[in-house]
Image (cartoon, rainbow, N blue to C red; front, top):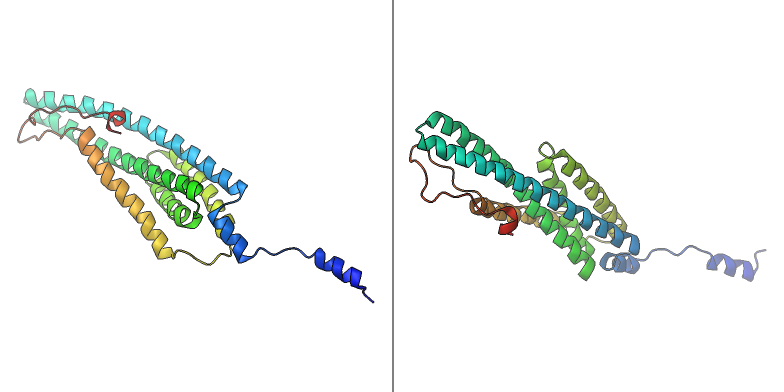
Length: 225
């Protein structure tokens, strides 16, 4: 017959379950390993932003060269050659806008992660950031595969953080709300990128209207920050 002492010992050794209250606490104030994962993700995102800035400055240097060649060709009356350079300029600007959009989206994702560490509320800040990161990284898959691969590693880290902090906790934000927040990050980044393109890259000369008045190369990426 089981004694009272045996029963009491068994009760004492029964594993404690993670209560909803404890999980909600971890959701707001993540445990050490999760915090470190997010800190590492912030560091890696900052490195990728630096790589994008470097690529943007190289693109802008090439854009200036093509711009000057376009203008010189128009001055010489060689519209065929000017059209060729103008076409290359248009492609450079498309690439620049994509990279700028990714750059500013990553900056917003980084701010979300920093906010999650400072004020907590992991789900509200982390979930939209994870969704936006995965979408924006896809823009670079063919253009900058090294940056794409790094961002995919960051995405995996943040996915793990999400699993560790929100498992078994009732949804505090619906999937629709998370997706809308993620799309807002991308929309805002696209708007800023469009503005920066206008500031940093001069208007492409019109082959019919001639050279735009006061056409000068725009400010560098660093100057425009």
